[in-house]
Length: 168
Image 1: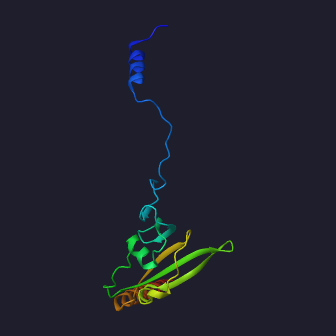
Image 2: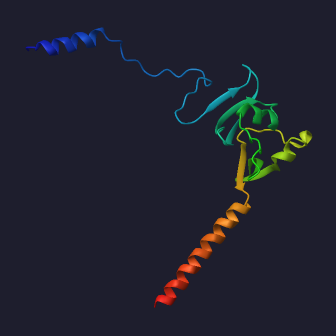
Image 3: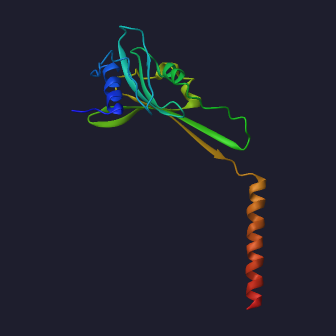
Protein backbone atom coordinates (compact mmCIF):
# COMPACT_ATOMS: atom_id res chain seq x y z
CA UNK A 1 0.00 0.00 0.00
CA UNK A 2 1.33 3.33 -0.98
CA UNK A 3 0.48 6.59 0.85
CA UNK A 4 0.70 10.03 -0.63
CA UNK A 5 2.31 12.84 1.30
CA UNK A 6 -1.11 14.36 2.17
CA UNK A 7 -2.39 10.97 3.37
CA UNK A 8 0.67 10.58 5.58
CA UNK A 9 0.11 14.05 7.04
CA UNK A 10 -3.55 13.18 7.79
CA UNK A 11 -2.56 9.94 9.53
CA UNK A 12 0.04 11.75 11.57
CA UNK A 13 -2.46 14.45 12.56
CA UNK A 14 -5.02 11.86 13.59
CA UNK A 15 -2.54 9.96 15.71
CA UNK A 16 -1.50 13.12 17.59
CA UNK A 17 -5.07 14.47 18.08
CA UNK A 18 -6.96 13.92 21.31
CA UNK A 19 -8.66 10.54 21.47
CA UNK A 20 -12.42 10.51 21.03
CA UNK A 21 -14.32 10.08 24.28
CA UNK A 22 -17.93 9.46 25.08
CA UNK A 23 -19.94 12.30 26.61
CA UNK A 24 -19.68 12.24 30.36
CA UNK A 25 -22.82 13.26 32.19
CA UNK A 26 -21.96 15.31 35.20
CA UNK A 27 -23.87 16.95 37.94
CA UNK A 28 -27.51 17.76 37.02
CA UNK A 29 -26.83 21.36 38.00
CA UNK A 30 -24.34 21.64 35.12
CA UNK A 31 -27.16 22.07 32.62
CA UNK A 32 -26.63 24.06 29.47
CA UNK A 33 -29.15 24.51 26.71
CA UNK A 34 -29.28 26.78 23.72
CA UNK A 35 -32.20 29.15 23.53
CA UNK A 36 -33.60 28.23 26.94
CA UNK A 37 -32.56 29.80 30.20
CA UNK A 38 -31.99 27.33 33.02
CA UNK A 39 -31.17 29.15 36.22
CA UNK A 40 -30.46 27.72 39.64
CA UNK A 41 -30.97 29.76 42.79
CA UNK A 42 -30.45 27.27 45.60
CA UNK A 43 -27.74 26.22 47.99
CA UNK A 44 -26.13 22.78 47.53
CA UNK A 45 -28.20 20.16 49.35
CA UNK A 46 -31.20 22.49 49.78
CA UNK A 47 -34.61 21.08 48.75
CA UNK A 48 -35.67 22.70 45.48
CA UNK A 49 -38.64 23.16 43.18
CA UNK A 50 -38.50 23.71 39.43
CA UNK A 51 -40.71 26.52 38.09
CA UNK A 52 -41.24 27.56 34.47
CA UNK A 53 -41.26 31.36 34.22
CA UNK A 54 -42.84 33.05 31.21
CA UNK A 55 -42.73 36.78 30.84
CA UNK A 56 -41.01 39.92 29.73
CA UNK A 57 -37.37 38.93 29.22
CA UNK A 58 -37.44 36.40 32.05
CA UNK A 59 -38.54 33.23 30.29
CA UNK A 60 -36.80 30.06 31.42
CA UNK A 61 -36.65 27.23 33.93
CA UNK A 62 -35.83 28.30 37.46
CA UNK A 63 -34.67 25.92 40.16
CA UNK A 64 -35.25 27.69 43.47
CA UNK A 65 -35.22 26.78 47.12
CA UNK A 66 -38.43 25.14 48.30
CA UNK A 67 -39.24 28.11 50.56
CA UNK A 68 -38.96 30.77 47.84
CA UNK A 69 -41.98 33.10 47.68
CA UNK A 70 -43.57 34.53 44.54
CA UNK A 71 -42.10 37.96 45.27
CA UNK A 72 -38.62 36.46 45.61
CA UNK A 73 -39.10 34.52 42.37
CA UNK A 74 -40.12 37.72 40.60
CA UNK A 75 -36.99 39.43 41.92
CA UNK A 76 -34.78 36.52 40.82
CA UNK A 77 -36.17 36.63 37.29
CA UNK A 78 -35.33 40.30 36.90
CA UNK A 79 -38.60 40.83 35.08
CA UNK A 80 -39.93 44.30 35.53
CA UNK A 81 -43.15 46.08 34.91
CA UNK A 82 -41.45 49.34 34.02
CA UNK A 83 -42.51 52.75 35.04
CA UNK A 84 -45.62 54.38 33.74
CA UNK A 85 -44.04 57.82 33.34
CA UNK A 86 -45.48 58.41 29.90
CA UNK A 87 -48.89 60.06 30.06
CA UNK A 88 -50.07 58.51 26.77
CA UNK A 89 -49.26 54.87 27.68
CA UNK A 90 -51.28 52.79 30.12
CA UNK A 91 -49.58 49.67 31.51
CA UNK A 92 -51.37 46.81 33.19
CA UNK A 93 -49.34 43.91 34.58
CA UNK A 94 -50.85 40.64 35.76
CA UNK A 95 -49.05 38.05 37.90
CA UNK A 96 -50.32 34.49 37.43
CA UNK A 97 -49.34 31.12 38.93
CA UNK A 98 -50.62 27.95 37.24
CA UNK A 99 -50.37 24.39 38.46
CA UNK A 100 -51.37 20.98 37.18
CA UNK A 101 -54.31 19.56 39.09
CA UNK A 102 -56.28 16.53 37.95
CA UNK A 103 -54.51 16.40 34.58
CA UNK A 104 -55.27 20.04 33.74
CA UNK A 105 -53.49 23.33 34.29
CA UNK A 106 -55.44 25.61 36.56
CA UNK A 107 -54.75 29.15 37.75
CA UNK A 108 -54.08 28.96 41.50
CA UNK A 109 -53.17 32.65 41.87
CA UNK A 110 -53.87 35.70 39.73
CA UNK A 111 -53.46 39.32 40.71
CA UNK A 112 -52.76 42.67 39.13
CA UNK A 113 -49.22 43.76 39.88
CA UNK A 114 -50.37 46.85 41.77
CA UNK A 115 -52.24 44.61 44.25
CA UNK A 116 -49.65 41.81 44.16
CA UNK A 117 -47.11 43.61 46.33
CA UNK A 118 -49.66 44.84 48.85
CA UNK A 119 -50.83 41.32 49.84
CA UNK A 120 -47.67 39.47 50.97
CA UNK A 121 -49.45 36.76 53.00
CA UNK A 122 -51.76 35.63 50.21
CA UNK A 123 -49.21 33.96 47.93
CA UNK A 124 -49.43 30.19 47.48
CA UNK A 125 -46.33 28.12 48.13
CA UNK A 126 -44.35 27.25 44.99
CA UNK A 127 -44.48 23.60 43.94
CA UNK A 128 -42.44 21.59 41.48
CA UNK A 129 -43.80 22.07 37.95
CA UNK A 130 -45.55 25.40 38.58
CA UNK A 131 -45.78 27.96 35.78
CA UNK A 132 -45.32 31.60 36.75
CA UNK A 133 -46.25 34.34 34.28
CA UNK A 134 -45.93 38.09 34.27
CA UNK A 135 -48.14 39.48 31.54
CA UNK A 136 -47.71 43.15 30.66
CA UNK A 137 -50.34 44.84 28.55
CA UNK A 138 -49.60 48.29 27.13
CA UNK A 139 -52.17 50.53 25.53
CA UNK A 140 -51.85 54.02 24.19
CA UNK A 141 -54.41 56.53 25.27
CA UNK A 142 -56.29 58.28 22.50
CA UNK A 143 -55.52 61.97 22.68
CA UNK A 144 -56.71 65.10 20.96
CA UNK A 145 -54.00 64.77 18.32
CA UNK A 146 -55.21 61.32 17.22
CA UNK A 147 -58.85 62.50 17.16
CA UNK A 148 -57.91 65.46 14.96
CA UNK A 149 -55.88 63.23 12.59
CA UNK A 150 -58.78 60.84 12.08
CA UNK A 151 -61.28 63.71 11.68
CA UNK A 152 -59.16 65.47 9.07
CA UNK A 153 -58.67 62.26 7.09
CA UNK A 154 -62.39 61.54 7.15
CA UNK A 155 -63.11 65.09 6.00
CA UNK A 156 -60.58 64.72 3.14
CA UNK A 157 -62.14 61.44 2.02
CA UNK A 158 -65.63 62.95 2.19
CA UNK A 159 -64.57 65.93 0.05
CA UNK A 160 -62.90 63.61 -2.45
CA UNK A 161 -66.04 61.47 -2.75
CA UNK A 162 -68.20 64.59 -3.22
CA UNK A 163 -65.90 65.93 -5.96
CA UNK A 164 -65.93 62.59 -7.74
CA UNK A 165 -69.72 62.44 -7.51
CA UNK A 166 -69.99 65.93 -9.04
CA UNK A 167 -67.61 64.97 -11.85
CA UNK A 168 -69.81 62.08 -13.01
